[in-house]
Image (cartoon, rainbow, N blue to C red; front, side, top):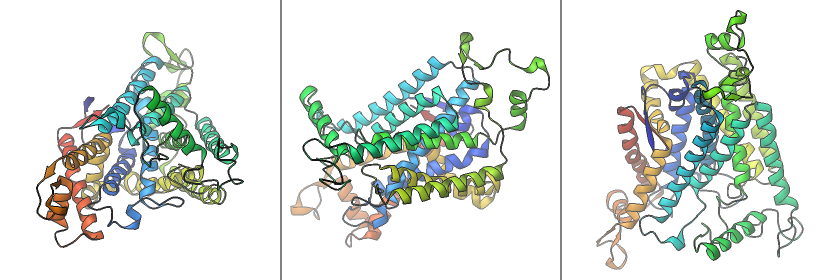
Amino acid sequence: MQSTIVHPSATSASASTGISNRVLSIDVLRGLTIALMILVNDPGDWAHTYAQLDHAAWNGFTLTDLVFPNFLFMVGASIIFSMQGRIRRGEDRRTLALHIIRRSAIIFALDLFFGLYPHFHYTHLRIFGVLTRIAVCYLVAGLICLATQRARTLLAISAGLLIGYWALMRFVPVPGLGIPTHDMPILDPDHNLAAWLDRHVVDFLQRTIHAGRLYNHTRDPEGLLSTIPAIATTLLGAVTALWLGRVANPAATRNINTPKDASSRPKRSGVEGPRGTRFTQTARTFLPKTLTPGRLLIGLLIAGILSLAAGLLWNIWFPINKNLWTSSYVLFAAGLALLALAALYWLIDIRHFNETKTGKWLTYPWLVFGSNAIAAFCVSEFLVINMIWIKIPNSIGPNGQPVTAWYWTYHNLFAFNGSTNVTSLVFALAFVAVCFIPNWLLWRKRIFLKV
């Protein structure tokens, strides 16, 4: 990892791009998302949790099912902010591509580490996972955005991925099982193309490198085929960031888009990189025509409502399903992400609620979480693994046997009068607070970790 030191009032994206606090809502939404991700992942007792804080059994959705796509949506937005900042600093395509590949590889390596730690039983390693999906989506979406940052092109690619995934799941026969909608339901939990492919991928890995397992034994919620629509989720976040970038600094826009004299025009179209390397896109592509904050807000609201409606409509034929990351799920989750971003954009970037005394206190925790989101997630994973690994003698444990530090902490400090939904939630909130502390220390020292 590498660290960047910037003023804590700036977003991590703005620190690297020079974008002002007008996109502070991005960091707030990212922080809310990562905090909610930790909350729903780590209840005190899975047998006692509120329905909205657990995943839907199969089709349908809960609040929990909307957390991961919202995070990938934010990843897509961060790709644009980071890439445009690096372009402004003169980095060429090769440098940007290597940065994307290196960062994806490190995120994937982190997933492998958490899968192996602390026993390092290689044969039980799960290749698929949350960080693996983030790494793949970041890699593919990043390289696509490196090739083009035209919003229409990115939307067309996203549409192609969603329609293509639906066609695969709807029309392609599953070997040995039959044709969807004819021989089995379109989204049968185990009898579908995605699950079939996941099983065969793991079988291949077991035969070749003697490693690999599936989260649900017969399928995996972060499997290979369902990563295709997850990439579309990331690209939709990138398109949104391009829209946010259209509320540009007037001076910067004037210098690039409307020079006053011929001497201020570039000799050739493109963005100059080191050693004379040029980007084929013009500067106008990277700093496009401006929008007013009000028009941007209306655009976010309209896009959110349309995406939400499209997801609900598609749900009739291709049900909303987080486990398979269906195309209707992508549109539905993206619509809610756009509406949430619109609300925060109005509150923070237009009304400047964060500059009030109350607003500073309410937005501060989410800015801290959002500034080092991957670090916060890794801290939570590390704590969970260690608390399950460490055994503590406990008289209240089953048959008087040692119990995990997780069980001991929950039942002795939170559920000493019995486990309930409330005690399970309180434990999860306390765990989020514990994970907040390392991020707060990094924030205090103005350090923002970048993998």
